[in-house]
Length: 143
Image (tube, rainbow, N blue to C red; front, side, top):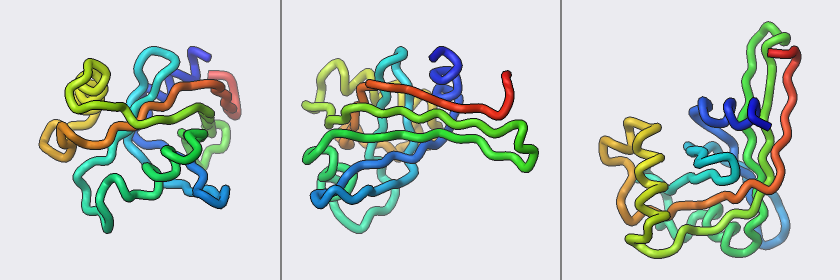
């Protein structure tokens, strides 16, 4: 599991999968940060959106079901370098506007992404917490 967590820590982007009200998957790329070895945070940032943050499919889906999957992968033409990490977990919105968890998760996200430090992550942004329940992965060869 340590190798999987290490790969998650260094990855810049992941694909987050949620389930809509009819049980259909919704997958999108997200920026994220790992906290410890059992928690992941991602946020709704200030990039242009067609709807208000609380109306985004990922937010509504997490409020309905909470079950998510998150995938980080690496591709190269040399297929001996391929790998992926799959996280399954339970997601929820981080409550409150000034809780210790919110302050901590915002700090972690801003530390990882310079764009967030430059203002693309509002203090009141919806923050999604993913509690890791299962983590698996695969690689073409031993590292």
